[in-house]
Length: 322
Image (cartoon, rainbow, N blue to C red; front, side, top):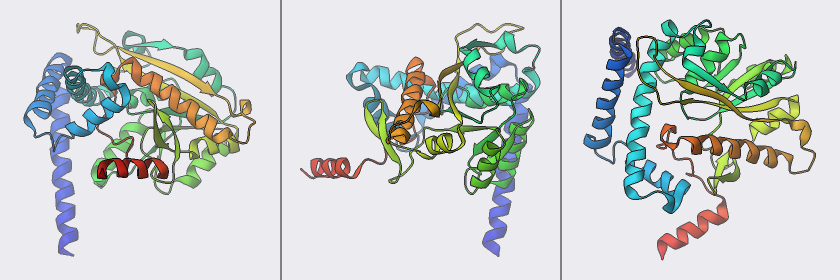
């Protein structure tokens, strides 16, 4: 009982601190927010111990992805730029509700291959909108809502119920509805059966039972459920992104992003017995192309290659033992 009470108090204090930060950022200009993001990036990258800020995880991931194409100095600069991007993204999420509207979105966003995703969304068939922890994925989702394409946003429940509720309301303010990643299978199926759209992030490790397909040239455990859902419900898979573009701040310029559709995958094009693997590989390759556009905007501190196929795990263990 005491432990439960302490947990509730901790959650309330965390939420209070979070709302204080949100209120402070809301009162700042974009230019000040950018400066604050740089200060926070310097603090996390250069002052916090590397075993705490997961520097070695990011370093190893970048080595796996780019090999000798990046020097140690380039990797270090990429990791710093990643933190700068993430802190800027936080400030953009706070400002987005009052700055981004249908009538001014062209001031902040340019589009690439827009017609491909719109065609899929207007086809009458279900759609799986996929992205990864790249660019500003929350802005991309919000934009679809602003344009009138409402969808079920599949996301993990946050441990803190007050923070979870804040983010739920933030995502639903443009007309979406949220679906819990844990235990939300029936809602996902119902949405697809009704010809609706689901938004998912597809770049996390799927565990030992995932489907292993190459990502940056190395096998990564990937969710096969996406391809299975596409096959079963005749759903398009659209791989998209929102990539920050360089720009100069001005009175009327807050952010500048490229929102693009990298590839649309139609399950009707796959008839082989290995169709699930082929579709999974296709969307993984599309996401890889997206990340290569601006690797500093990808979340490299996630252990994407944590699990490996049994045979490969055994070889790696033998190599370490030797």
